[in-house]
Length: 209
Image (cartoon, rainbow, N blue to C red; front, side, top):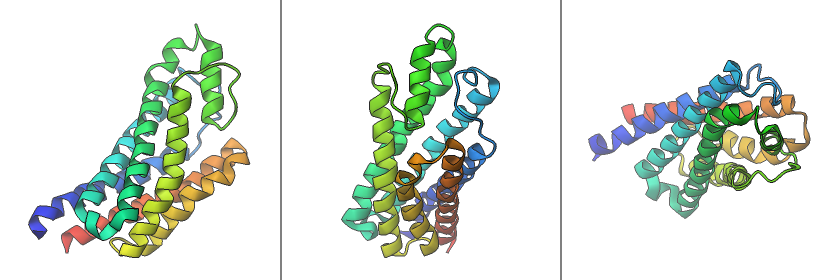
């Protein structure tokens, strides 16, 4: 049984640790989201990195839940579902940002500006369509899912408890930092990345035992 389940732990560990490192890396020196930034190589590179980060996070949460779904309990499984939905929505948003926004920035600047404003917590002055729903799902999934999943991991003791607690606190605290300037908001996201690295590393170590 152990040899069958360990690969899930290894995938979860690698995915979450890599996602956490990417999450921290993309916050460092991140310029303000302006329409002038859209279309630059830096914008495309950062948004592409966020696509990979969201995909790795989704894979890590899913495999960790498959590995220890019973021990996580109902709270953990529901938390993983909500957290995963948040990352899936984030994956869609970042894919649109990396592939679509640069292509239409010159012809539809009002729409692109509205998306950027909504992404930073503002109220767009124009209809941005389904991306508004994706942003809402991403935010709610990240906040509530991270809280529930972090608490479930802490209670189950499957991975480092400090990392589980940090995940619950860091994801929930995003609601409080929404009123802060964008630069501080990005700094506040770093603890989530650290938590993911800690969870991933301890999951990998558990697989090796």
